[in-house]
Amino acid sequence: MTRLPIEIETINTDVVVVGGGGAASRAALSARQQGADVHLVTKAAYGTGGSTVHGASEIMSMGAAAGFGDERDQPQVHFDDTMRAGEGFIDRDLVRVLAEDAPQRMRDLVELGVPFDQLPAGGYKLIKSDFGTYGRCAGVRGKTGKAFVRAIADEMKKLGVHIDAPVMLVDLLRDADGAVSGILALDQERQVLLHYRAPSVVLATGGIHGAFSSQVSTPEMTGDGQAIAYRHGAELVNLEFHQFGPALLHPYIQLFSKSCFVLEPKMTNAEGHEFLPDYLPEGIEASEVYQEKVFPFTVSNPSRYIDISIAREVRERRGTPHGGVWFSFEDIPEADLERNIPNTMRWMKQRGVDPRSEPIEVGIAFQCMNGGVRMTGATAESSIPGLYVVGEVAGGVRGPDRPGGNSLAEGQVFGHRAGSAAANSAARRRPVADATLDESLDFLARVLSKGADSDFREPCAELRSAMQRECLVEKTADGLAATRKIARDLRKDLDQSLSATPETLIEAFSVRNLAQSAELVLTACLDREETRSGHLRTDYPKTEDARFGHSFTFHRGDNGEPERDVLNYRKTEETA
Image (cartoon, rainbow, N blue to C red; front, side, top):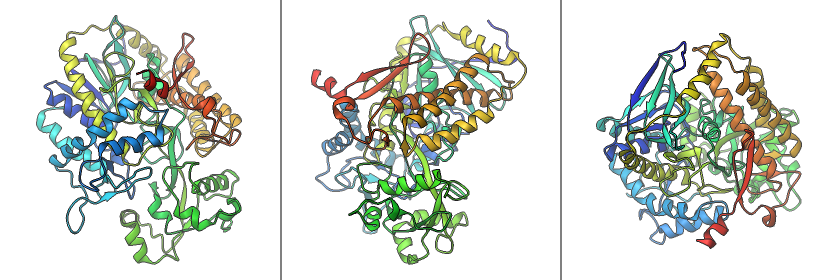
């Protein structure tokens, strides 16, 4: 075995779950409930990182037709709403599983003690989300994901799930047949390599928030799962579709949902000019745009002009110091604010922000990836045997648009299914033999042998700035190509000449993964030469169903570069 200037420990287990959010936690709990020995490995201290824990909005909630609301709302309606928003780009079988399983997963959470918001007269307070026919989304004071993780964590600890944190995924390990045989990870506090020997791995590492200057989660999400799975040959799907929209930028980042915009705040640029009317076509009034606002950004709705105008003002250097514009709620009665956005007002007041006394800075922030490592079936297994993918790292259930509340539901539904399947598979596959461990250790040895740190901080900052500018609201071939060159040059340099010390290894690997994931996203955005939902190509402003009414998948080619394939879910369904 390769000699390294760092200690290696081997841990034998049944299932390793990589991630610390709602999907990861549910997968770990379900695997343990099946009798497996389970290690939950998470990059940030457990309970502090990721979209589920950190995310918050006025209407953050879980969608499930669970019988708590309108009696006409059934899993079939939930299925129809989801298919209508993403038909042709999402797997019908996976959506069926989502709609049918979500009610039981919500009842599981109730049994675990999640305190879903109640109506004064009794019963659950249900939200009618964007693209939803009925109110089916239940929340916990706008910080629903955090409540999920807290409740699941309590149960995991009772059942003896091992929580290893902060520990970063370094590489997947494979056996001679190509199936997963465990992972290699780095204990950040002890600076010890951990070799987890396990026949099942559940990947739940989240999105690529760290690729953008303004994002609503935590920056340790650097596309680790996407990049590492891609290097091992997994298929990724729908990478060009991601979610973003207006958010408070300073002194902290906070999403602004429809509830904020129906109050019609005054928007001005750094010069004090009220700019929204400048961007509205004839026949559309500012009030209509405000009242129609949805989150996330989509061209299918007149409210797109809010996001477009904010982004354009910032691009043309009329923005605020933190890359946004000024919002003023000064003329809105306090009673209206408290009635419409009670959670948002509470959070702002807790941080010393008073939107009625002074303007606040609002800009465009990245929220969520809709694509990721492709789930190939109902147990959330990827195209790599033994590797399951859940949460934001996964792709197949989210297309250009999706109903609000589906994200948290997906994490619970497929987290449960993946965890259960991983446990059952592990019982059949034991013991496992590593075939790629030496290869991973050889790469680590080369990185650590140089005794110095690669100079990647400046190009990484350049990449984040370019992603923020070119890969959110308005996209063009020139901007995307220039940004991809930054990502590709950085990725190639780090693939070939990455150097780090044990103390800087985490940051070095994070940047390498970030560059790889950003390159894949930019390639997908370039290849989709049309405008659809949140993917606005100003050089290709029309939606072209004949040419692009299908998904793209990417895998690593023999030359190491991304190769694109077409995945037409409509034809797959017709064949089936």
